[in-house]
Image: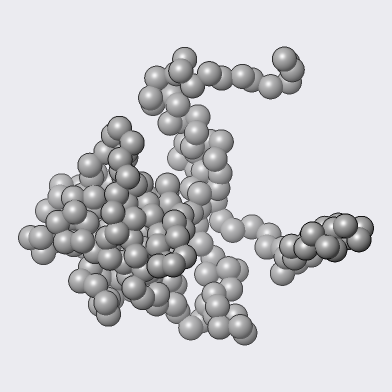
Length: 214
């Protein structure tokens, strides 16, 4: 066994230690800034950094709730949520939305964030978010105390100022935030392009070039 690696058996760790380790290893992670609505009418806005695309037909996203938090309760009650993408300029208010407020407190109000009406679901969008995905709840997967929430994407609203010439978002204009471990966040950094190689071209000797700026 190489002495150049620290080998850790997860069975030897308690849950908190394993969580802290994983969040410093699996980086960077996109942040789902999820807005939801309780049955009582109170809206909620919270960042969830275990998130990704879960399917393409139908288009589906997912985020993980560690424990039963307001977002999960609201999605279970009303069956809808909006996955907003936060930006570098919104780091402070996104962090404010992670505060453990009482369920009757709206993070929109506490953090001083403007709402924008959604068009296909009831929970509001974050007005300043460059991208908002309106979702209908599409099931859950439970792993002990963690719940993966799936949402079918019904509509995507994109700020025109963030669009590239091909009509899709330019990542540098979106300027999304990502989560690392501890209390660390990250910005997008350098963006580069690499085309995939087809097997026939690989057999002909083609290999990936040095990355070029996108």
